[in-house]
Image (cartoon, helix red, strand yellow):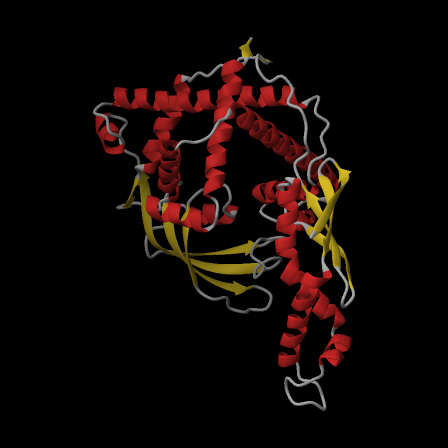
Length: 422
């Protein structure tokens, strides 16, 4: 096998591969033989069509099968010979083959661009302060109270704002008189997203009491069955529950955390919020350092990675692929979002490239103990056993991704520790 490299750009190369005729010939004849066995040709018994006829009838199929058979190993050899590490699957093109001759084809390969690291030690960066206000602790405590709330049946009164009400609906279209299916729903009385008439008519109703109300639904109503229609509803209250929040005291502290007093709970929440803020501050300083490092790097990034990162960011933000983003945005906002997201994708890839190169140069890597701790954290957050998570990552070939993530974190810590904090 012979292979040569043509550099198309810093991130893209063409590899021209030529396989000798004495290697290609036997493989080609074997493929022709397999085709002849499987293909039925009129006028011949199954599997007995002449090989020359098969070659004339299916030249493109045979050539594709030949590439599928020989290209993977040839590509692998070529990549090793030239020391290339592609970031995506090579694209094969310009296939040239005649029976009895060599097989030649090209493979377009995308790689990370080569570049010299700028000086990354002693980067000046503004310090980001991390602090916690008492009001933030109060909000955290209120969230804990909300999570610990109980919903108790209401006795001796009707529906009041903030109650959770189980309602049975029977609707009839005013114009057509058509009856709608009976439905049950849980309604938060007084909620701003409810129909105003619903909130007004729920007030004061007791279990088993009914009330009629007509609602004129707008044409753009989210429920297409009633959009643009006037519906007369008969509404019956089945039961009412009110939300009871626990007292903010030592008993609450004991029930929600491994502490004995409310003061200890406040202190623990303060520490948790502060750790989160300190981590965010450190990440912000790291982001500023990477921005400084990348400002003078005018690198061409692999197209496939740029598109993949762009698509990933769009999915994360809008829940659809980049090809369907126009369905989520008005035309006047589409171009701006696409431009901003592409710029964000480029920054993300540049940061990854810089951190990877720094990690490699400094010799950062994850120890087995660090890997195990990270897997424990992932297993806990995903609520799966540690052994099952590790087995799944190994099976999918993604364990190295976790190791790389840990090495990149070490690079981030290194940059911040080495920086000059202003």
